Length: 248
Length: 352
Image (cartoon, rainbow over all chains, first blue to last red; front, side, top):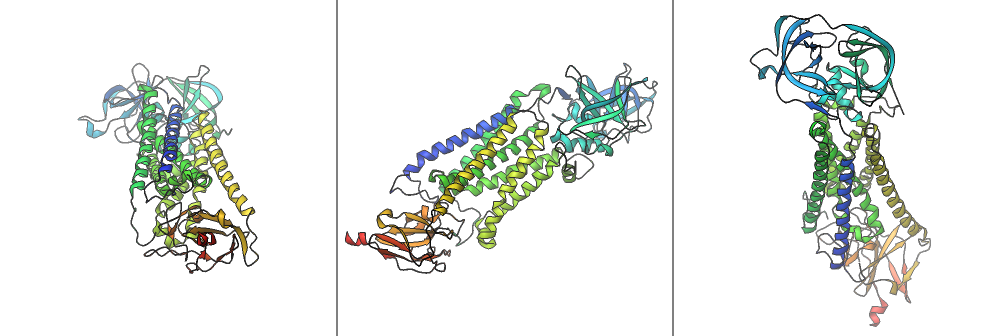
């Protein structure tokens, strides 16, 4: 601004000498805002490869209700069953079918070769969501693995397998907590030596489902102590001590 | 000026200001969403709503940095004053971006379950002693509440009815909101997003804002330190020639008071340097249409009585001045706001 020139007043015409520097300031601000946007967006981590199918599919196998509803296919693959929203698979349509051969209708969530069924809504089908087809197969063989102390993160299986991407981390904590308290299986995800994900279903000491006890330890680095077992193609860990949060 | 209240007293500059603001937000959101969609595709795509949560949340924080930088920048150079003129719209927009971020979080992370979304999001953890597990959503919630209070009371109606002192105190809470938001990010998303760029950007923002405020503060403090000792009845301020026609000179008194002396139409007058509106520095303003005009928002006062021209009703204190030889003397005792004081003739103007 030069001597004698009028100052900038918002409701009066802009002085000539104000225009050029103001254009430079506004232009600089715009570039800074664009830079911030690009830098922040470019630095987001890869959420991992996961797919939430949109098509309704049918799955046949033997249904086991406890500790979490699963469908074990004839090939021995264990598919966890959950419902729409943030709810586990227990309840209407599944109750009373323990050990029965069933046809379940729903959508697949897939990650790292692991699959989970989100049951369809009854209004989408002419048949039952889970159809009873008769007697089922025997449960999968259970073998004990060594007792372990494991580090990792507790996630809800549904979001981590593709319902949300990313379906882990602190930002997702509230959602994962809501999912797990709603009955969706809690899974400890740790890293194998090759960097791939290692999945273990978390159960209580007697193999019972646990939800509320995990609140406050979901979506953050934790240390878990328990006895690991293999149930067919599923690994579980039965906790022998409370979960501990790992602070840096 | 408070003759009557309108939701927004639109004028050409405010419209351009808001158009540029809207353009900046569109640029930010489009760039963020576009890059997210191009970089993470197919099975690795980030959920659309999570991209939106991030875009609006980070957009609010970036805009808050701009809001907080404008004040000290305008103190350091009048070139930045035009950004100050409509800053309240930036503040309200910051709140709205934050509100959209919070609403999406409630719907996406807190919804579709068996619990109230608000308690699901705010009650997921409660370990205030842990870094990894600190309830960071609570920090964001309190910050949003502060931004809401500021946005809701940003109108001049509230400034007039709450009183300038309380209004200013309330709006200084923006610094608390900023600190809470920095911690919201550090104890929240940065616990799982591992890119070093995030803490670097956040740190650079905090250092830049802190630096600007310190430099602007030091500049003001230096003026106060060099202030005139006003224990006597009259203090020597400057030579008449040092005053520019229709421009002000700010006189700092040791009492922390600041007085603006103006030379205009062959006369000299002195009024408080503090604008009744938002405390703008009247001495850095100018006489326009016979009125001292504040450089921040254009509030006007008649130099001879410190009163806003009718129909406006603002009043500020006036001071007596006199000229001895070529020196301007000021009586540091402030008159009641709006007290008329006969302007002193500029002897140089009389000669010519």
